[in-house]
Length: 207
Image (cartoon, rainbow, N blue to C red; front, side, top):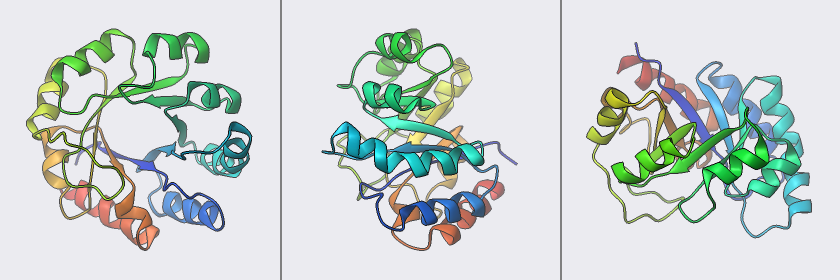
């Protein structure tokens, strides 16, 4: 049995019935989904904050970390649990200064051991490697091998997240390689979210 957990990433559209879908997904895997990333693009802060509020409450009620994608200022405004930074989204040190000691700060490191070590030195709380598979959510030219997860886990205490096109069908090698978290989006939201979370739970449990 592994202690790998799920890190849900929101679809770009979180309006309408999405709060109910988030509840169903989290309730399908209590203890399995430990983080949720709020990822919306092209909205002003006011609108983003309005959409985030109900989702933040749902996460807080279930002790799921609420992480904002790419936007340190929005994370601060929402008093979110943390922020996830791409390589062009700012420095983890700056995020730490603005968000405080308790904030969870994650950094995208693609397929680069060097970037991951730099992120760790800059105070990141987790590093994300990927995309491991083709993703419909976000294009990426980076294709790390699962071994990078094992290499990281053997050397560093900071958790690592595997991301990119991960489904219940293909996730097992990543879990076995040492991923602490699987970051998933399309595999959950493009169908029945509760069934997808249960399918992940089954595969992670079997790995």
